[in-house]
Image (cartoon, rainbow, N blue to C red; front, side):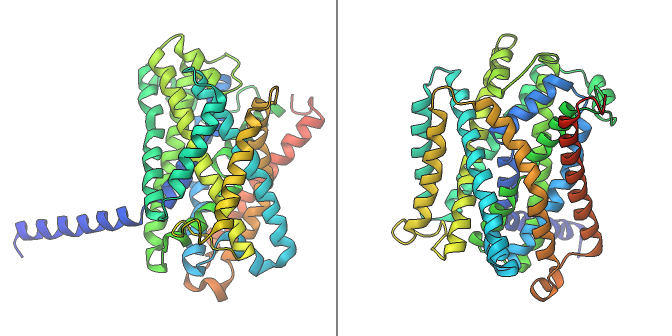
Length: 422
């Protein structure tokens, strides 16, 4: 084979691989980018304003953490052809199944409220009243979901994922100091020392990067997409790429607020957007548009995670490839969750900012239990076969659980005894 033929053959083989990935891409990127939801944007913006670039190193650590957690759902879904809720019920019985499902429903609904908080706050900056935002979002999400095809839903959602990258050019527009980012952001440090506030921010950042709903969503998405065991390597690559994207976006948000708003008390991403508009209108506008997009992405995925789980447990038809007449209860639970969460935002005087930050901490507090179930399911050799967890995978997953439990415990202790870590 001459060099030209060899080059053509290599290019053709590579292009076939790219085409195959584009067909299988979706669940990993969607779940990861959607986890940069409205609550996540608020958390990252507040982190940058509070600590500048000093916690960027901690965010970077979350890339492999997020990947190792979520790739387990790819293997579990592709091998068992069952969603996460169904897998827990089958493996551990009704008691633990209902415990897991109730946890999911509570956290999902509260998180969905925070998505509407972010979306309404973002569009209020442009003069759109909250009631109109809630109504428009419910109609838009209804149109996306009721098309009757998973493939169409996924490709539309990926377009919203691309919009989440707005924060990257926004960071360059504020001219951050690369020297300060490298010096303060990449060297592990604990600004202000060990205290309850630092633990709160660390837990909130973990909670917005890895959340219980993500386990349920990605496994159900893998099943609904129809991925097989032979597709697992591509699913893992998709998840790894998504892990990088979600943390990269988080870092750029921290860079924006750490550059312009460091030392300013920030309670929400919408407040950060309004503050940024005073110094650079376009950066503030990008922050607001990105916040709306983040809330919409989160709402799309979280509401589906709940509906998929309900369908799995009650035996309803629960696929996006079904029409509303074929799966009425699946769509009814979807719209019920969506509409009730949206109405909360319209209640006068509701503590919306407190709910937004509180949900991130609640999510990470409930995460260890969800991870333990996931690890046990991945160690069932009879079910998983060659795709069972290896000792090294179990070790990494165990470390993740221990770290989260330790951080949760330290936060609780520091809250009860605020002088202990001073």
